[in-house]
Image (cartoon, rainbow, N blue to C red; front, side, top):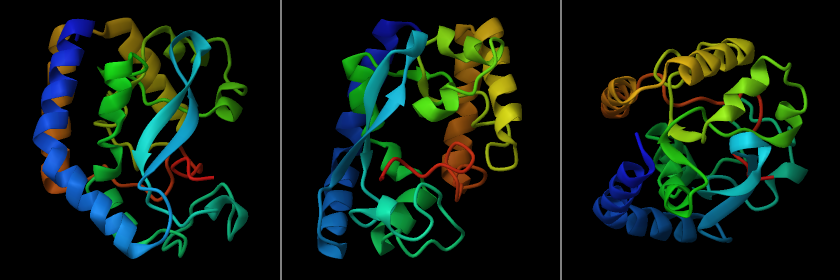
Length: 198
């Protein structure tokens, strides 16, 4: 999708999701002490860093407890509200703010952390040629079952084949996955790294 359409979709989605965000914010504040939102450094297009907006789903200081940067199955650092938010990917709704800011697109490779980018081969770095997205080709093609190299390969394929028609296909699959809850929730975001609350 082009930038203008990204802005329209993001603004519309924020308006529609405002009641959900208000309820989620209240649940987070009632569940555990700490901020509602969490911002975490990610790598964007051409390797430019930015801060990703999310709803907080873990206890404050989670990076200094338990498995540190990793998220384990049934990780006790994830709050009660956090489990529900993650189950339906609602913690990602504030990503729409990043779209308005120009850091993200609606569709594109999911943004990752610098330590992973530092390990990229020249071929894998091609995933940075486009603006990262809220949803992407890897997300709708087995996100939770894929290894990290397989996901990168799908992202590079997207870079080479991106088009408005492909973006619409990805959006349609995303809506279906969100409706069923299948394949979107993962204990390990970006293959082993937590959701930025560290």
